[in-house]
Length: 387
Length: 88
Image 1 (cartoon, rainbow over the protein chains, first blue to last red):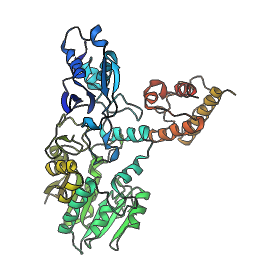
Image 2 (cartoon, chains in turn green, yellow; image 1 turned 90 degrees about the vertical axis):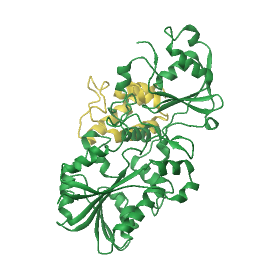
Image 3 (cartoon, helix red, strand yellow; image 1 turned 90 degrees about the horizontal axis):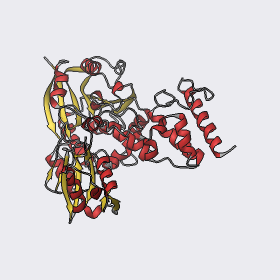
Image 4 (cartoon, each protein chain N blue to C red; image 1 turned 120 degrees about the vertical axis):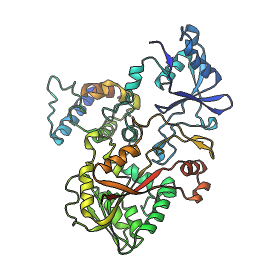
């Protein structure tokens, strides 16, 4: 098949005579000037690429990068959007420029091979397949940054002493929202179980309402951090959350609320598909330890907008979707799949909220604020067993 | 011992140790030792890979870049020896 322009491509303005060629589905991008753009459009000619196309020279800007390096809540758009911030141009022959176009899936010559690139990664060395977001992140951290993913996760979310969430969208949306929610829902007499509590930040935030909170997590390092920051009504225990024995030590009907924040997603999408949590076991356990009338509060990344690209102007955001049912980059199931997984197991949603950001964050990062204000980044569900 | 011999024996020794630690066997003298795909054969796992890369970089005083890691050759014990040998 001859080289052809990939139908997933859009062109974005980046400055005077500077254009971003963006593959929306693959989330790849390349910076060019008008002549480079013209070369790309020549792909519609039957004799492309001709000798003339292959010669000549073109400035090309490498503007694609894994922008979530700065954090899961950093700009996920994977491109340097403003030409003023682009690195120095590389001057390439027409032939090498066309190769960059094909490497970035802007031009393709085999649609089956292109479709196959969206399959899961075979292992951490596999760069041919885009894989799911967890796999991309793990590969980037381990191979490009040489970082331990656990340590990176802590660093992108918390201040170095773990006493506070960093003033990024975690703080401005998740902490701000949950602080309000916990104050509304939890009382001194309540017992709250935080499953997969990690370093316990939200357990401790919940305990600040006066509720008695028990945090469980398999990671001892995280729990020692949690215990250091614990108030008088919070306690923590190591437990293999995600396995059938995880809650065996807990009595029946002993909690008013079970809380999971950013942990349930791994029961739906995992970096290693063989290590997905078992929702049957989890919900059975939660149902057993909840008091009659108790609630399971699930706080997870928003199923639509988490990691959706931040397109548009700083204060006038839009986003763009290339997937919904057939999820590759999304980390959460659709609401239909999510809610029906609960319904099938005898649970119903009794409250739904979509988190809004702290208005004060507008001055800290206007683009991030505007996006999070328009497109929710976390979803909260309260579930209860059917009566 | 030449630099390349040192790479060969250092890499073989590394996989022999890792295989033992992970409950696998790797015989550096076997005919198929060099064609062994260390990740597929479970000598190390994904998390062990970063440790392996950093170990070889320190041991042999070179840096492995992203392009090299993408090559099919990088996936086998013999291929890894070739890639590292070319850099020392």
